[in-house]
Image (tube, rainbow, N blue to C red; front, side, top):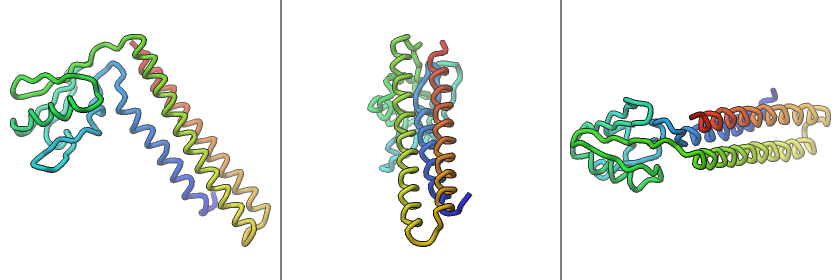
Amino acid sequence: MDARLQQYEDKMRKAYEYLESDYMGIRAGRANPHVLDKLRVDYYGTPTPIQQVGNVTVPEARIIQIAPWEKSMIREIEKAIMTSDIGINPSNDGSVIRLVFPELTEERRKDLVKDVKKKAEEAKVAVRNIRRDGNDMLKKLGKTEVSEDEIKVMEDQLQKLTDKFVKEIDTLMDEKSKEIMTV
């Protein structure tokens, strides 16, 4: 592959990886500690990820348990969870916080699948926009320093890259949708 196309492949990969990390935050009936990844806790005036102020475990399929390293952090962690969009109320016994994930209803599963498909479509649009930027760059190159045949080859390579990432995004979307719909 032409070195000038490498930056576009990197950008497409980033769009894919962003979608992948976004999907980790979508809960599918089972407890997934990644739903806490974006949450920050006020740790002595510094916004800190929950994973850095306590031990996060999944003792059962639908329970996340957070054992703060300092008991004084229980309040802060609970506050962060309650103000987030996770939609689960934490309970604590004075030393650990538990998040119990309810079984998802069929309707909620379908809504989540719609959300998954929407996010996948946004990622595909991002990949196509990157392809468009690459094609624009190739057109400018064609006017100055590169032959039409070379431009054609690079356009084909760019299209193959786009097709590859769109296919990977579709595969990721199908896997997440299947995971959500599995009871």
